[in-house]
Amino acid sequence: MQYRTLGSLEWKPSALGLGAMRLPTLDGDPGRIDEDHAAEMVHYALDHGVNYIDTAYGYHQGESERFLGRVLHGPHRDRARVATKLPCWLVNDRGDFDRLFDEQRERLRREHVDFYLLHALNAKTWARVRDLGVLDWAVRAKADGRIGHFGFSFHDDYPVFEEIVGAYTGWDFCQIQYNYMDVDFQAGQRGLRYAAARGLGVVIMEPLRGGVLARPPEPVAALFARSARGWTPAEWGLQWLWNQPEVSLVLSGMSTLEQVRENVASAARSGIGTFGPEDLALVEGVRAAFLSLRPIPCTGCGYCLPCPSGVAIPRILELANQAAMYADASPARFRYRMLAAEERGDRCTDCHACDARCPQGIAVSDWIADAHATLRDATEPRSG
Image (cartoon, rainbow, N blue to C red; front, side, top):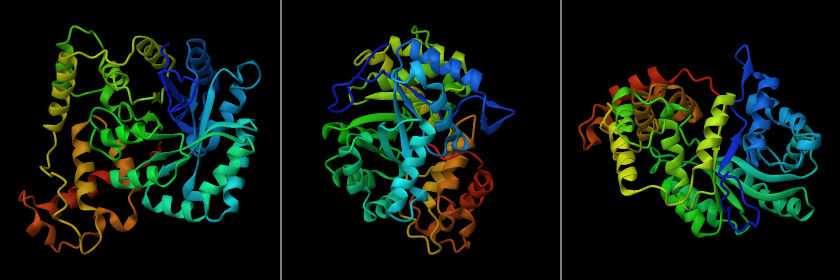
């Protein structure tokens, strides 16, 4: 296993972290973890040097934290650092900080949580927990030893990310969605470098976009096959991340022991600066091939805004493109479900104001209707 640097911490995280959001389940029920197989996965990861495990209050309908409390009990307790997250959407008053955190400590069977994050911050949830005093609460929790290191995970646009990073000098780390297709999405590469330059560790989630980059369509897979590296598409995605010095560790939400074995072996071969010009060019070619599959020529310029009905037009068009680009549309549907109800496509009144404003000449209102029909059925759990 290779080990990396996480902000200013002396402790070194493994290049690969185990994400406990997609553990094997019984009969497809997300609330019933197949604990025998999941424990085998955790123990294999620990035995091969993985020392960071990530979970959250809502993963597996609350069972992920409980499972880790059991599987990391006894002799396995100190073999890995555990990260979990405050479900900010459940916070309504100041008392909820302690109430939820105490429940999580009970589930995890730990008085002390090594890494604690504010989960899935966006502009609205950040404003609410900030105004309720979450930063003062975190200072106290660190001072009395209940929390080791404090950070946040993020799902919004870059300006919001910069605002959150700059609002508090006590952040130890952050967690962002980042992969070779998301260099300009949410925090993106700009956010990765911004946070790292300010001394934060940066944990990467969704390195394979929920698995869709591991299963590329044939035109994309053919590009990878041309390389003499012999890597799978999944390994290309992971190695691209590990090549970057600002990346502290990469989380993978693995579902099988075979995935753990493959990713552990890949992490052992990882390193900063291991990509040559040909490797970087290949990944850029793959990215271009994916982008060529986008049916809507939207540039995200925002000229269509504001929508009189409040529809989040550029975001919806981007999600529709993502659903078309990848073999699995469920990640795009999940992100569509995260939009506020008043921002979704069914609020469109066919006023066609957006059509008139679009410099690309896109029939925006027609695409919004199609996008809503494609994206509206979402059932996946909250991520990151």
